[in-house]
Length: 308
Length: 269
Image (cartoon, rainbow over all chains, first blue to last red; front, top):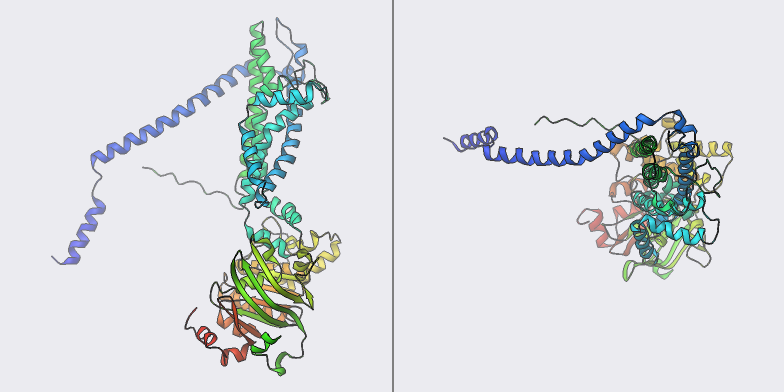
């Protein structure tokens, strides 16, 4: 047998040789573990979705969206959470304005002025802000805006508290996505004789806009579910309030009071409906975030489904 | 001036009629403690194409970026000596680097159109972001600049298409048009064709011939044939020194310095 023959034979036998049963078994076990883990993660999500949707849909009706908690009866339920929906939307809007302005400015500082001596300190403080419990943020605002009567219990104070929680989320998103914009783009702008701030605001920032929008929407999803910082800032209000200087209701706190202060099952069921509305708002935010962060220039090719 | 006399002066006949536009006097450039360009004296005349050649890391790109003060952006970079544009020191007191860059345009190694902007907006960016609002003027400048960049005929029907939708060679011509739109006096080109195919390269080389009617071009190139094809003068850099500067045709046929000869004949670099 010549040398070439031997080589050809060994190669072909290597290619056609079947995987040993032991390795096959090992592969199946590992795959089983991974699949099991995935299922365990999905179970709580499925349970939450099922419970909220099933219970929520039973008591949801038109009144729920056009009437306020004031109209609820302790015996028969009724009324709605319009006051809480409007309150949440208004306060999240205030938070979004604060979060975007402060968050984007800080993100630009961290990414575009990296040589500045304060960058390290600011980044650590932003990270610390991420970790501060929401209830503590609420307490700080209570000290700053409620006890001083500037302006006292109000939607504005609630919005500011939510804004503080949103800031570090937007800072991080802005910084990360600005770092992805190539240096060559900045240089191209500067080489045209444009001042640095114009290059940053009109060339670099637009190139990073989709990432910043995604960060902002995730921030909205996060804070719209917060109840703790609102307890002693916006306080709550059974009536529909659109004046930011008045106390305001919010969905998470409405769910809390409906669920725990309920005197009848009818009211208790409304807590589920409130939870459903809240969950829907957060889901829509997340879907929007996905929509904005999808690749723009091309459609992602369909993943090849490997059949092994 | 003494230093310059040591370099081969261009023969009177070829480009002596033109005025000196850009001149460096004892320019040294440092990155921290490291001296990347050492005591360079060189002058470029109006409406010429001037090639900077030399092996990698010899300081030619560093020198180029000092001319429009892009080095101000590199932490730790420092420039000593004078770079004069029409007799005014670009590093003088009270000179705003932003103004310098407005007068001295730059084209980079890799095409870098602004990703979020259309072809039109890419070209108009320099004027628009500086506050020009007159639509008619912008239209004119965009057309003139795209014609200047030899791109007009290919894109005139899709000015609203994204700049990034063009091919690499077209993108580089878009970048040239973008630089031309702010009407610079000097155009710096940092290996503008090194990322392009031969056909696009030759289009851009042809373009330089036309462009020098309106601007003075300084081009860094690794490609010796390109230097000999497009440039009027050539400067050979080696480890931070300007070894030789002279009229291209002379330098390529009759280099004065042994190192120049070795480099252009391909013995090293």
